[in-house]
Length: 127
Image 1 (cartoon, one colour):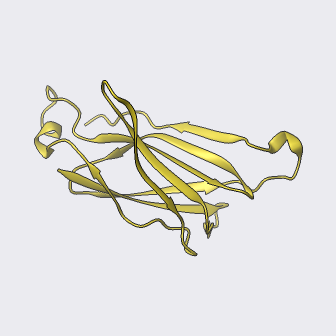
Image 2 (image 1 turned 90 degrees about the horizontal axis):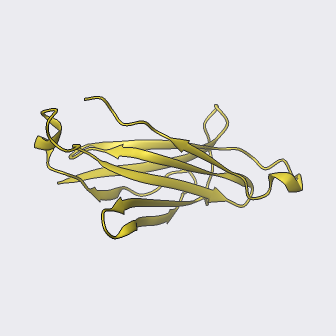
């Protein structure tokens, strides 16, 4: 099965698009470590192209005694004028398109802000 992901980078709660951000999407493959799924730059709307992501069968999410019915991915974005951001455990479900918004914070220009990355972890869904 396959799920889909689109990422949009914005700044502020006004959702002003951030063009030219580098977005990476990866997942953990048991026994092999982290696997890179996509690297893209956002367009003038702050959007990536659609990313296809392998997911478990839909049946896995229908009963509680089955393994998880989604694929966890990590989504990261960076752009030279903004602090980076990493979102862990973004859940991609079979046959569903997930839109993940990443809010980038402009760099304040102080040397202490250089290279800072916000790390956000999403807890698992209770299905």
